[in-house]
Length: 168
Image 1 (cartoon, rainbow, N blue to C red):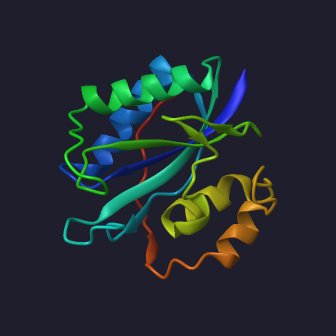
Image 2: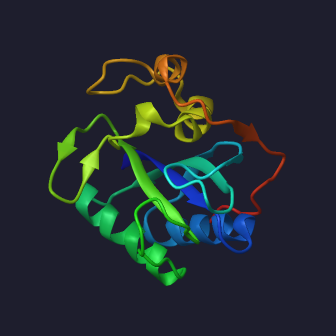
């Protein structure tokens, strides 16, 4: 089993419910989540003329290979109603592969680690809760160091929202 970290984000509809549905689908199709960050609220990144996002990170143990994991997470997004209309646009759910063990994979449709981890506080803030000492396999900095060096100045607000998901 491989340990992967997935970033989840949503800014349409019942955002908390969207996260819960995504986690349930991930548990069914990818593997059982074993770690959950807090849920953070942030303004949209890239295109700020849209509703705020809820973001979180989960750790999942999976037998899926990276490419199959990408296909599976994209299927979950589509099944939940995600429409890919514009880059950095509104979305009912976004599931990003942040880290897959310590693998570095660069292909035409998949980059692991996620190429924007170091630039986005809304990813680093929840990730630091789970793996602050994990060293980025390309940048050679820990997640905590990436957070401290991040140039992103957008406010990332930790919420009191809780996920209602029961294991297995």
